Image 1 (cartoon, helix red, strand yellow):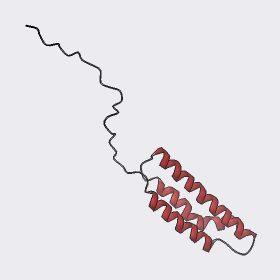
Image 2 (cartoon, rainbow, N blue to C red; image 1 turned 90 degrees about the vertical axis):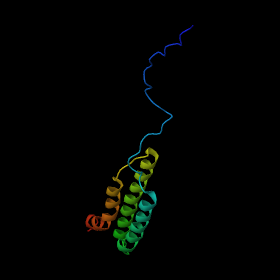
Image 3 (cartoon, rainbow, N blue to C red; image 1 turned 120 degrees about the vertical axis):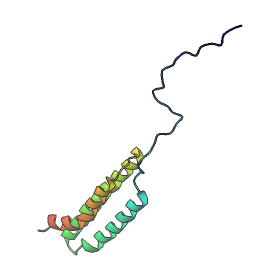
Image 4 (cartoon, rainbow, N blue to C red; image 1 turned 60 degrees about the horizontal axis):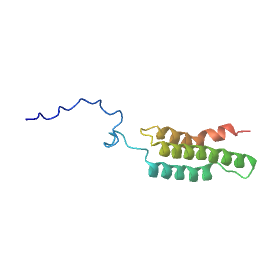
Length: 106
């Protein structure tokens, strides 16, 4: 009678591609972020402009801040970032209604 072959111990795989990683946090809520950014953009259009060069500068700064936030959100989507750091970017965009007029005062 022959003995069955004894299985040889093998090292565990370094990366297991068959089982999905455990995700404990959800990704950034893009619909919420872009919805709030749209509201902020409309508010900037109402609050910031005036009929002078200062109003133009205020709007350009506001749109620049919004563009930076949108680019950061898109980068986060590409990198599949998790967590709640998106709130900081919305806070920067929302607070721009207050700090942009302080910058362009004179």
